[in-house]
Image 1: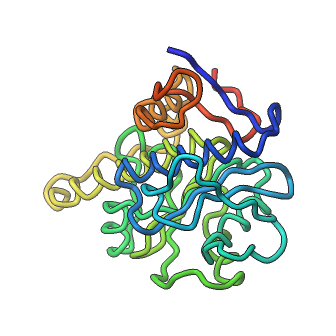
Image 2 (image 1 turned 180 degrees about the vertical axis):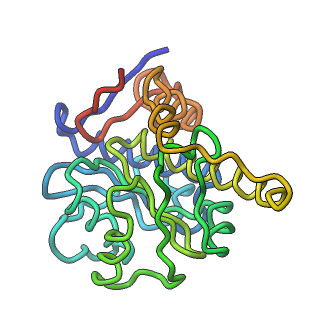
Length: 254
C-alpha cells in the first residue's frame, strides 16, 4: 500500500491541501458524522486556511474548490457564517492544522442531556479530562459567539454544542477526522451505558489511564484515517487506496 503524506509546510501547494480537505469532507459525510450541515478546513500558513465548499460535504465533487479564508479579517463572500469558529481556533491555537464542524448524531443526543462523552473506552480518552459543553443550542452568527465557543473549548480537541453538533480540531486532517469519529464512538458507548448505569455504575477511566491510552503509537490515527477514507476518488498515489494527508507539520507519533 502506498503511503502519501501532504505536508503544507513542505509542499506549500494550495491545490494539494484543497484536495485533501475535499477528501476529509466526503469522509466525514460517509461516516455519518455530517449531513446537510457541516464544514472542514486545513491551515495553509500562519495567516490563512482553506475551507471546503459551502454545500453538504458528501456532495462535494471531484475538483470542487474550497475558499481561502484569512485567519484575521472578515469572512469572504459565500463562506458559511460558522466558519468563524475555524478562524478563532487557528488564531488562538498555532498547533492546530485542521478543524471540522460536524453533526454527529449520538453526540447530539447526549448533548441534549447536557452531557458530553466520558472516557469509558479508548476513543474517549483523547478528550480527557472531559469534552467541554457549549450550553446554547443557537447557531453561531457573530464573532462574539464564536469566540465564546472556542474559549469554552480551551485546549481540548473538541467542544460539544448542546443540540447543535460539535467542533473538533487537531494538528492534521487525518487526526481531525479520526478524532471526530472517536468523539461519536465515545458518545455511542456513553448512551449505551446510561441505560444500565442506575444498577451498574460505569467504569470511567481516570486521568492516568487516559494519558496512557490516548496514544498515537502503532499508526493508530493513520489506520483510522485509512479505514474511513478508503475508496475516495481523490486519494493521492494509487487510485482510491487509503493514504494520509497532513495539513500541518507532523508531531512525533512514535
